[in-house]
Image 1 (cartoon, helix red, strand yellow):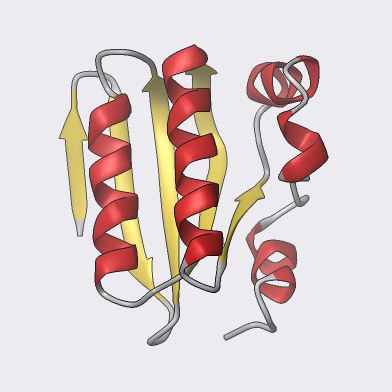
Image 2: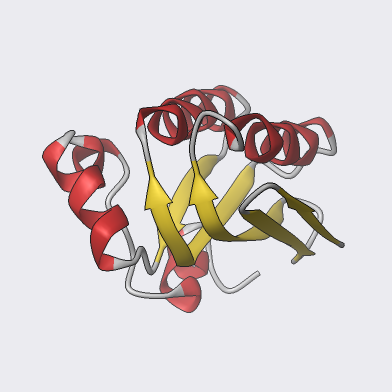
Length: 122
């Protein structure tokens, strides 16, 4: 499944009953953050509480995107899972670092490492 809105691409790959990988590309900002939030909320509604966000194609993220990530990690953890960040681009990694998000959601080098952290390569 793939959707495009404004400058945001989201591809969803269902790994198993508990795990999904969302590949996010383009720009995550005030205009596009709601779309990503909807995709992540849908995964949780379907019982997939281990969500991996592949950020390797995300060129830009502002505070709206950060807020989506913070809300999503709380929802995933409340559901017994977690949100795992994979392969953020240098500009996105910088935003995650300077805002302190990496303290609660340390980014992984790639999707395989994030899946392993989610409980094994499901």
